[in-house]
Image (cartoon, rainbow, N blue to C red; front, side):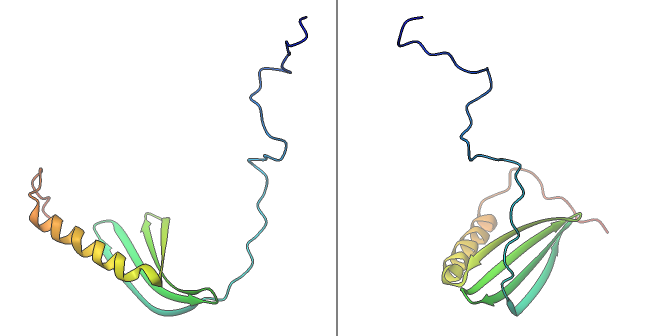
Length: 109
């Protein structure tokens, strides 16, 4: 063997020693959250809940989507709510102005 040649242990991919993809995560500490206001809407099969909350780190809006028991959540800090509202208003306006490529589906009776 030439001095600069190296042999690799096996064909397994290199993993850093601290990497443990399936290691159990420690539980997060409980943080007291106060609910200031909550609202719910249903759009087709989706159920949305918007909750304005406050904890020691500040206020935030939590938007949760529930579809058939599966939950997805986004959290927007209160410092970004005005910007989020502006963006949402722009999307509503664009949705009304841009013609749809497919005919709208009639709601079931």
